[in-house]
Amino acid sequence: MSKSNRYSPEVRQRAVRMVFDHEADYPSQWAAIGAIAPKIGCNPETLRSWVRQAERDAGRREGTTTSERDRIKALERENRGRRYQVAATV
Image 1 (tube, helix red, strand yellow):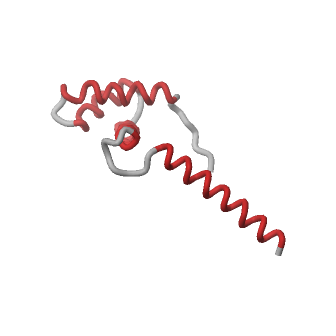
Image 2 (spheres, one colour):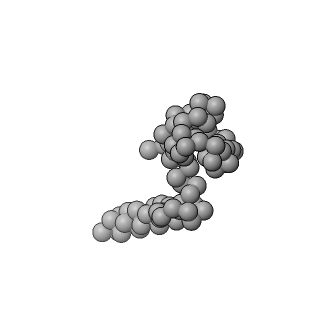
Image 3 (cartoon, one colour):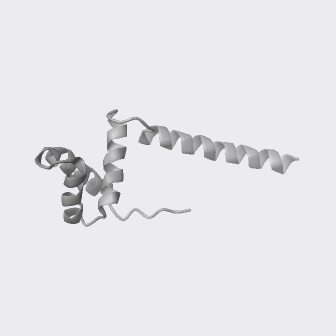
């Protein structure tokens, strides 16, 4: 299952930084996201998910960080390979 990345990491980081920098100018973080998303050319829900992940990565929000998620993926991939090797030898 390949996921296309329409937005570069630089664009994502810039958009998240804009939300963090300007959220005090709006009544809520969602209002800031709603105002900034069209300027970036993305859906507000997409930008919201980037902001939430950035908050998790910074320790401002509970949840799995990007590095933890990458490690879990690598371990799952390794387990799949080992299961395949065991099945092939039986």
